[in-house]
Image (cartoon, rainbow, N blue to C red; front, side, top):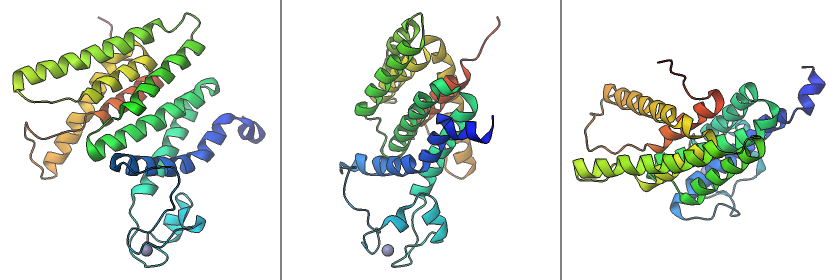
Length: 255
Ligand SMILES: [Zn+2]
């Protein structure tokens, strides 16, 4: 690919737009759980309430150039926004490297939606159906458009994903006497099934389980004891599993 091809490639634009989208996703994930509108409203420094201008809000650049401090009161700026901007950028680069141009846009939108869901679930243990349901419909529509044979596997994936997660939640409640998984996890797995098809579901659950275990073990080494009652947001691990299966397909087992 020559330099001029790269300029014309839609994937280049996705990568360039990513930090700005990340900025917006940071606002959404921060304000939505608090019931604040995420469109409109000027940004303020949380310490001195000074209204921030374009110079203060350029993705990544401002945070680095201002040495992580507010220009007006010199108090530290949270790493939240730059972290989300970097994550959105990495998602776009990852997709651009792995996915052909025809599916790059839907892949990056899928990844950004998963990032937003993971952040909200980490923050407040909530997977808003106002995002998971449209995500599932979008996956179904994208695959209906893309697959010649029709999105049958995706339809089954959505139904089986929802039912499987509901089943696990029911078993958990029955044997442990309390809620373990939220209804949001079932809707999320249904949405992921609508993207990857039912064949991808076992791999998603495997990756999600491994991811959750690694984080639990890491945090117990870090001094936080693992107890059976400790609450763990499962959504971020499902999101990660869904992302990996979408990019690389389900694991193949040769029996
Ligand atoms: Zn300030």
